[in-house]
Image (cartoon, rainbow, N blue to C red; front, side, top):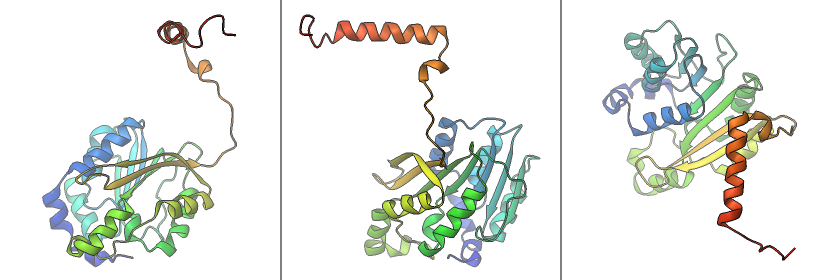
Length: 242
């Protein structure tokens, strides 16, 4: 696992990068998935707080717990981010416990590739323990082939521990921890298809919930009109064929 000392020395690079394309893109993905003023977020691997600062601008009635392996990074964040709903603390995610469990979102952004693969099952079990049926777990990590490319051609760009995390193994281990995939996306930040974004929740029995039951009168009316228009626009099979 990467050491606290490595990331203590990584602060200047983070500060120069600031709220970069990756950080802002992840913030937008959280908003697309319902992040709002009352959200409760557990941010794992917060670094100097670039994403935390964006969360501060959105979350007013909720709360954020932000943690990182690097004490110096946490000290930097505490110096520049002041908000009553935000709590920072340093520690190893395989050892610490949340201060106030009960989260809408747990974020693990660009962390898994820095934790040895053999420690992932223990980490996922801990994450599952902190989740309720309503908690959404959000993961972001480099595409494994992008890591392999850098290992071969640009090793100087990699961090102390930067390993490929193969998708099939990752999803299998998440499933073993009692988590199920809601959505998966390969997306591009600086290089085409350089990152992968996963959205998960705790496994639950399948329940049939009709979408029509969630619609009001006007939504149902629009659906009926759309269906009738579709029959007119795409008249197949022709009348009289059945």
